Length: 134
Length: 141
Image 1 (cartoon, each protein chain N blue to C red):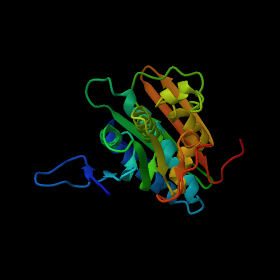
Image 2: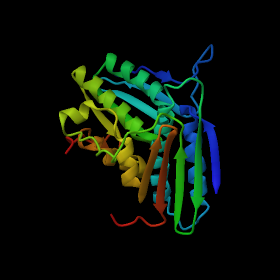
Image 3: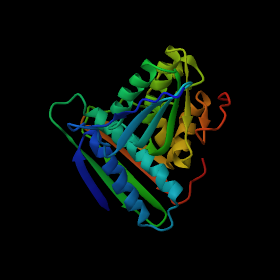
């Protein structure tokens, strides 16, 4: 059975609905075997608090096999990488794991230079089979 | 020279990156990859500058100056925080070690050094100036 829960994390929530923050939007989708965190925008000191809130929600219930989809992210710096490590820690604490999906070379470069790609598998597509991190 | 001054608040980070990248783009010989490197390095330096002001009363301002030449761009990020006590830029945390994994910070300064051709940090009780130099072509070493 496919179960999905859409949670939109944004900087400001107007009455009567949700809105996409100008620089970051985070959506959580619950599937039967995994939780997908879809991130859109830029991950830096300004937007990491929103991502952190979503991370707590993502790892708190549902499948703890968490996949962070960064294919719609066009910028990540070291503060963003720190937040991804935080999500990894929460997923592991819940008995799960973290996988990152990233197909943007400049984002992938930051993941590689900081070394997070040595401890978190990085896929180019959401449906790509997961190989253990080298 | 292009100069930018803004409050030391996180919401201005995107603006800092935008202005510096746009300045570098003026020189057509700068490849996109080098400009991307500069964007990250500026984000790191500006993040450090914002965090240096975090415990101060009031809102200080950060100055960014960009000097664009034929073969290079020099960006200086100046804050007025309490200063860094650094003799050298620390190494990147080793995430293959447990201690490194527990550390969700400490990547910024080594990342600046890796992504730029020169990184110079001048710190005093009146503030810190970080100078980043990116050559049109990535230098050796």
